[in-house]
Image 1 (cartoon, rainbow, N blue to C red):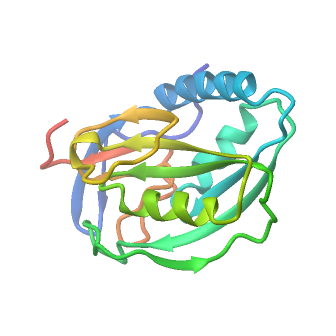
Image 2: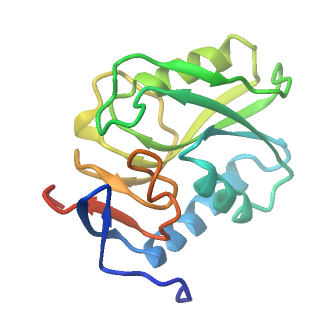
Image 3: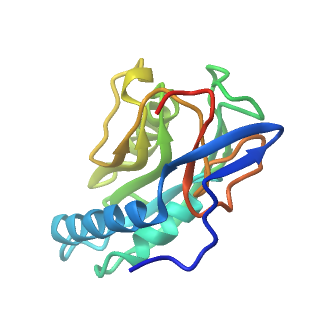
Length: 189
């Protein structure tokens, strides 16, 4: 099924040029696969998906549309980037989850894992609340940029250590609305 969204080959954001990296059709195909796997792994368990704001909101919405299991949703908001292209090295929790997760099956949903710092922080925070299980689902993983041991149970795409934009990923809060994922034109694909 082809998307009806306008999908330019290149975009400009904050004065920098980005080129197409992962198409909407590739994202849709991978979402179908992830949804099928989550349905199988969580059959009869009613997990709670916890999206990490702001980046994961589009990915989380699409993941939820691709599963048929009973489930719930909540959100956390963390920051380690601010308006920069690289992590500050410190994680700040800006919004706590509202749901009670003790004894629950929790699936953390993130847009991108690079250094692993934020993901390690989130897993530790969730485990402090004694869930039945914790799994991590990320759209993108920059494996070569990961400096911390990190739990990743469901990965949409492994990508090189390049700056990406679109499908929820931003550059200084811009570009999240793009329906595809773009890479900074100066970065290698």
